Length: 548
Image 1: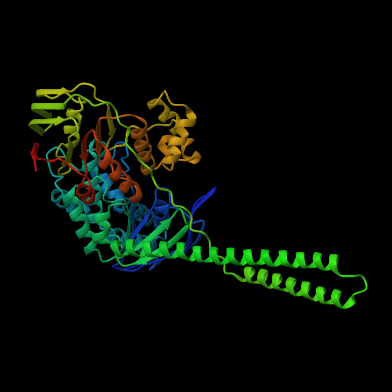
Image 2: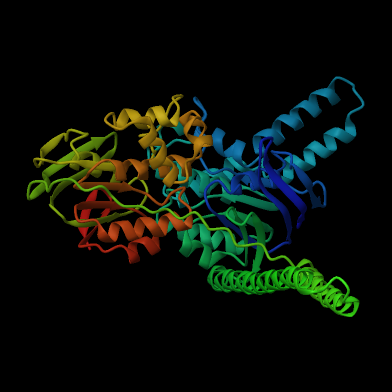
């Protein structure tokens, strides 16, 4: 079944704050709409509104036909304690809910209730969701995605036991197994390896229904979307751009230049009219004063002429003021927030940062090694490879966080390690953000901490909130702020572009260009790999590390 989603004049946010308003969007079969904007602009909120998970502050969202199957896959892979891979997929595809509804309708029908129509509708929805053959299709798709090892059993393996990359592939499997008429995707590329990205791009291209996706992966956007919806937090505007991502970048730049030129033209014209009106008022007042001072009391003709002249001057003033009032007001473009990011430096470390000699690590049936590598001071190394290949394990070995089962691992001296891990675990828990940050930099005053976080777009509304209530993008920016606050000579970044908005990613790339310490960069962001200067690239695959 094909379906069309229509959003009219939609506003979203919270009771105390409107994030966006005036969204007009039509998603027809075959459309792929990319939603972009700064962190905090309301992209995830918009998806929740389109999915029916959240009521809009204003406007309406309608779907034709009304019984169309809308699927929403959230930004973070929600790992419910005790939930298996099979249970997760059934929940995310809507099959679990459809099964419960059908079982309830069947039980009511068996009890003799007049529920034949309800059962018919529930059965039809159950079949449309693909629940009838989900168990048969699931192993095939999981095997296709490389999730068919003896360690992964869908009915037994818990989602909480999977790595970030494996959880991302399970999320991709849920999308491939779904039968949605309209698909809403929130950061679907997070933690996916290059093969997973290719599969996702192919899948989106083959979908018959409409797609609305939020992503900060520039290459993915360029390859996938047909239109762009921009939520501009700085200007408080929403704009739909036709064409793909590259076309959007060009058109956005042209629009911004035109807005600035229009405002400058308006401001210049208004300033000129105001100056001329001021001169006219001065002439008028000066003329009246001179006429009163110089005219004899009995010279009625001169007095009348002076009065007429003053009236003419006053009329000119009124005309000028009328022209000012008739000017079409052009609002000044607001200055956009930009992340001014630098990485704090520390004294140089020893010439050798870390060494692994014939190291072997065993995790169940998975074996990493033997690995023999060395990281030198100031060396810049990119690390890529499939999900589950052992990249995060390799990082833990290099940093001394994990002891190898065989071989020797050693660390250099005078190391100041700065790290953004895949799970963003540096900031987690119920504590306020400002308190959590102060724990990492105890020498800093609260005022200095608040000032630094504000520079990273984390204002008063963020620093007072519990860390767990912050979005992944906000936690990532807090991690970047910590890198600036603390000096480092060894920088470890594990999927740093996950959850970051486009301007922040570009600022991170610029900061890395000027960073002089050792760098270990794990990423599947194809444009970042091309933009960041690297000395070597390690490919981790099948438990082996190969230099490319």
